[in-house]
Length: 318
Image (tube, rainbow, N blue to C red; front, side):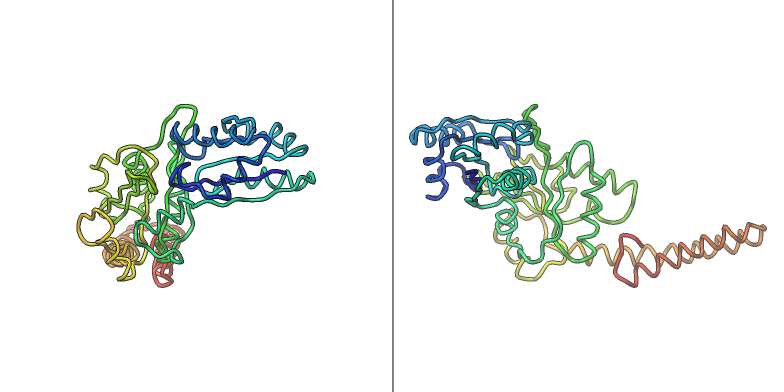
């Protein structure tokens, strides 16, 4: 049997009875440390729990879980536990491993732990049902999370941004680095998903004694030292007044909490009100100079599309 065990966000000492029982009763216990940085003390706590139950213990890197061969072979002939931080199924690698075990006829079960995704949102005082798609910001790729952020802002949804963790290098992307990468994409695409005035939240070390929640403009947050990882960034969409009240109470807040969806909407309307007349004047001047009508038709279509996107509430595309 393969049991996937989440120890939650509070570390090994906050493990529930079900998690401890699954570890103690396993013949072999594997602990992965690539989805989130795991303190050495937590690894040792899980090791002790495994060895006290007579289980072999091994901390495994990413490739061992992605390949899965050793873990699946062991689970086919005995009880095996794969232990991770948070909840097992935030990581798609764990879902795939469980599916492979089930397809091979190996029984599987789950011991869930508190997930950073829900814990971060709650600790910021935001409503879970208003959260949109989650994205991960990496050093290699910020355009995809930028697109997710834009879609969520247009829909009035909050965005949870996870930050890259490179276990091999022992490096965790800093919040200011992630924000700078997103601002660079904004500079190229200008879709108003994230600007220096955007209101955002940095949630650090959630679930631990060193937890810190800081909120304010992106410009303000980029000047902060967020300290040790892990960190997440939350960009609110449309804020309910109770969420704004909670942010004031729970976060170290610079300025008043504000809705990014409304801000993006107002800015898009302002920009179109300014640029549409300018484009119209430029087109008239171009026609007088004998410009190709096909080019002018394309320009008219672009303006019409922008106005239609704005009418539909898709400000980023406008």
